[in-house]
Amino acid sequence: MSGQLELAELDASRNRAMEAEVRALRAQISPHFVYNSLGAIASFVRTDPDRARELLLEFADFTRYSFRRHGDFTTLAEELRSVERYLLLEQARFGDRLQVTLNIAPEVLPVVIPFLSIQPLVENAVRHGLEHASSVDEAGHLRILAHDRGHECVVEVEDDGAGEDPEKVRRALAGDASLDSIGLGNVDARLRATFGDDYGLVVETARGAGTKVVVRVPKFAPGVSAG
Amino acid sequence: MLVVDDEQPALDELGFLLRADDRVGEVITCRSATDGLRTLRETDVDAVFLDVQMPGLSGLELAEVLGRFKQPPPVVFVTAHEQHAVDAFDLHAVDYVLKPVRAERLAEAVRRVVSGSDRRPAPDDAQIPVERAGVTRFVDRGDITHVEAQGDYARLHTDGGESYLVRIPLSTLEEEWRPAGFWRIHRSLLVALAHVDEVRTDGGRCTVVVRGVELPVARRHTRELRDVLVRRARGLA
Image 1: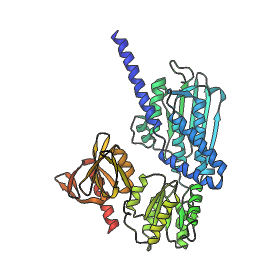
Image 2 (image 1 turned 180 degrees about the vertical axis):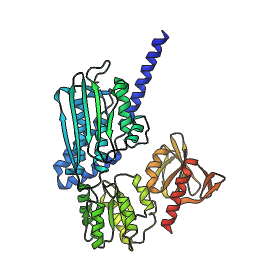
Image 3 (image 1 turned 90 degrees about the vertical axis):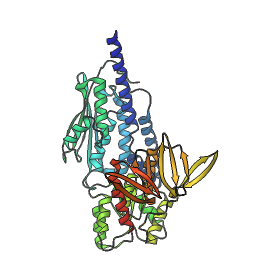
Image 4 (image 1 turned 120 degrees about the vertical axis):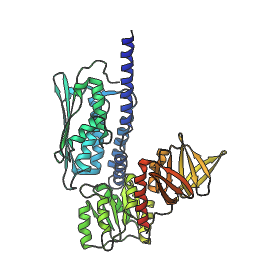
């Protein structure tokens, strides 16, 4: 009897921990991103008013998704929609300097994933690829792949940007919040809390060599459904 | 004027706003600090408006280089991020302006450039609404010597010895008032650098004297505080 109570408590505390982590991520919309986007939009109000209006609407939808309250899970389709909006906003700032390739297999779109598990990875990629780029004349390339692998769905977020010291990444995944890309540790923890320790993030990176983050998600997991 | 920003829309907008100002003559735009430096090799400018975060050489690094010129041009930082405004203090920038840029705010920055002499932080004209016995008054932020945390509230202490309670957590004030020269010295204390008379160290314990009031400085804030005060002193010298 006590064993069951303990398990229930463990479950409850795990859920609370996850909720806290999602809350932390929700609050993470970068002010830098917000004000730079608004600044770019302000410029377009004058030079391309239709585009400015469009961008404002995308901005509203983007923040709406990030502030969403119901449920800890979503579909890959929804998450990728948010990613696309984010990239549209970043492209308003960077123009041709941000080159994005999306390769999404339609059959994995309905797969259920934790809310904000891909979005932060893309934000990191844009930061590595552009904000820490070495030159304004070089374009940053970002690739997002999602494909079906039997009973799993695999999502890869790859950039050819500045890369990161693998030791720093190890520390971030171990929970060290001092690393800039706080999203990494957070996403990893929630993936593992949801699907088990086998389903953490796999990060391939090195200074000056770009970054690739791989997310594996089981297509059918007990107790996981989009809210 | 030279404007440097790696994001084209931001560069366009700032160029447009500056050109619309009668006091401003030619505006040269550059998309990188390196291009900016190349321009400055051949052309003298009256001021440089710089984005802080840029690929390659950052705005702060460029400002440092400009500071070494025989005749350093006045620098105005333009940034989306308030944190960079603190570093603007260190580099004796004439002003910093937040993105998206308001024409009036930019005009103020141009005024400071034009008036030339301004190496000192401008007088703080922000006013804070406080309530006392149902009446709202305005306190000049420039008069505030320090702020003390009281739970979710903050107690503002002024130069005149008065104090007021506001329903704003200290951490929020810390972030918002940092560009105005307020510094965290303790878990429950924020001080206005402009009002610091002395820093005392006594066998490892550090305190600041702020308009006659002695306040403790937490160990982990001591070094930072001393650094920022030294930099401020150099700037005003």
